[in-house]
Amino acid sequence: MQRGDKVLRIGEFSCLAKTTVKTLRYYDEIGLLKPVFVDDNGYWYYQIDQLNELLKIVELRKLDIPLLDIKEVLKNNSNLQKVLEKQRMNLEKELNKKITQISLIEKYISKAKKGEFMEKYEAKEIVVPSKSVYYKHGVIDSMQDLFNFVLSAEKECGRLNPTLKCKNYCYVTYTAKEYKEKDVELEYVEEVESIGVENETIKFRQDPEIMALSIIHRGKYENLQEAYAYAVNYVKENSYSISGPIREVYIHGCWDEENEGNYVTEIQIPFVKWLIIFEGDSTVCFLFCVRWAWR
Image (cartoon, rainbow, N blue to C red):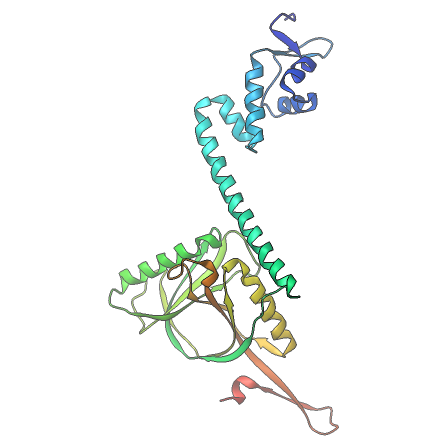
């Protein structure tokens, strides 16, 4: 093939499109936009009408649309609307994230002016009575899906037990051994007036009475880590030993509050506490578990 009026060398082509030669070579490598001809001297040539394809790539990249999605658009222009709508959703999620970050910055600026940073919490020792509960294990894609999981559990239990009344106590425990942002493993638990009918996913049990540390968190769920950080430090500094799964008890949330700032969540940490009692100068000590000493 000879170079003609409708063919441009790679340098000329890059100048017209304001795209570097390095980028053009990369687009060739991934199969996004290939030259029409490479001569015996290794010169790359593009047809003039390929400028439209390259300009489309350039414009879509300005929107941070992934190259794989752009490749689908070049294959079939009917994919353009779908790709654009998908990217709009991604950008809206990113925008919401930025808005949340700005809100947190404002919050911390306000606290910094007062010489503070973290929320102030208080831990209290409480006794949680024995309760009849139903529970459901599951895996959710992310924490944003928690409320839908809870609703599905409530509806499923209601179908099995249409006359069974729930009480005003529910919590979640996380069953994985490490924190996960996706594929979150959890158990949802809700108090009921009596043991009911089970199926493969809805089960019943009698939760025993426990002693727990109670920490109240007010505000958005994404700030719960502050309460957890306080709780862990409190446990360590006051000789407590965690004796069971930590419960996130939901008191007020999206079901009764429009403003996330008004959400109320209680962290309950089952515990035992050991007292070390020395007799005189003796090196022998006696360990008493406060859990039983209180009874």
